[in-house]
Length: 52
Length: 385
Ligand SMILES: Cc1cc2nc3c(=O)[nH]c(=O)nc-3n(C[C@H](O)[C@H](O)[C@H](O)COP(=O)(O)OP(=O)(O)OC[C@H]3O[C@@H](n4cnc5c(N)ncnc54)[C@H](O)[C@@H]3O)c2cc1C
Ligand code: SF4
Ligand code: SF4
Image 1: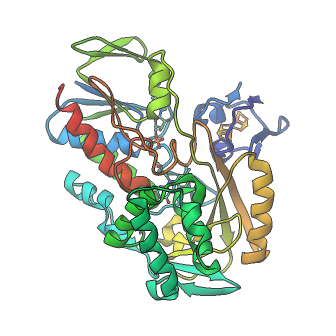
Image 2 (image 1 turned 180 degrees about the vertical axis):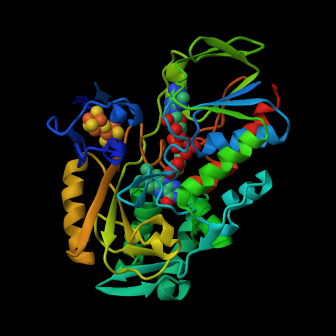
């Protein structure tokens, strides 16, 4: 999973990730070790910043 | 048939009004949930808002509450009490007219007279004030509008001031922003209106008699209501527009052991980057499993540096005894306001295409302005449908 530069930091991805794989402080950061690639964060991002 | 692009608050209000008049309405929303920046996602037992601070600027008396009633949607709004306090030198002072020096009030009327022939930016007025009044004005602008005094002219501010005096302060909907959205969705569907989630509109084409939207394939409509702002609407038509800047903000959601504010109003903060905070679980305990304190901070430039400042200030004001549930920042295409308060553009985009929501507001702030803008936009759209 990759977060592109135009991420605004709204944290919707963090709020919906069931695996606590995302931290957001200004921008999202995905912890690859915890991520199961369910793609929920991709679907909820309002600016299409997460790429699977 | 009318299409609404985006199921934000503006789009849903417009769809409901049209469906009530008997029009066939279809709402297309890109995300898997309706409400855009005016709803919440449940996280660790708390209704973390997707934007708005679970507050309606003029509570049960304002334009949004009136429009909801007109549509036939019932939402209970708890009016804040006190409306606001101001944290000044460690002391909380209830915000009332009499706490401001008479001199400041006289200066206000003087600037009002000047503004009739020379409308200056608000910082000129702010800098002429005593420290207390100036600090309050800045916190108010930061909390309510995510702007600084140099971003708005005196007359534009005066319009907002008049609305606030007329309708007074904020209120909290029971169930938060999401309750408003859920009710609007249910009401729309009960009238035969349709909402399609996870359906992005990818293009707009216009001819004399109709508007075509590219959803999965091109589909024709008699009129289109865009809830995605002027910039994105133009992009979908393959055009570019030059727009005033957006306003940016950071929202911190904290879980506390004990209430800090102990009331349903706003605590404005003097002379800091963070502008204010509210504790909406005092109005509706179901908004979180525990006390939920929301802090709002306007910012310019880089979010990360602003967040470092904000967190330090939160510790100064609130102490260290809290769990930080979420830090959310809003800018560019997902901002606090698509266009800074006072600079909103018109509601007609092109023949048969109107814009509603943030960026196309009527003469009031935030969701109150959205309510006024929606009514204006539909008046225009009726010319063509
Ligand atoms: C931190 C913060 C605090 C705020 N606090 C308050 C407050 O306390 N009180 C208040 O009144 N206001 C507040 N606001 C402002 C308020 O939240 C917004 O003004 C309001 O929610 C904007 O609504 P809108 O109708 O413009 O639509 P939006 O919420 O922007 O919705 C637009 C919808 O369109 C969808 N969309 C986008 N592109 C497409 C496409 N191509 N196809 C289909 N769908 C698409 C989006 O996914 C979205 O759901 C706050 C905002 C923020 C960010
Ligand atoms: S949802 Fe998208 S914009 Fe928001 S923080 Fe996550 S990646 Fe960034
Ligand atoms: S893909 Fe799923 S598990 Fe991975 S970060 Fe996104 S939401 Fe979390």
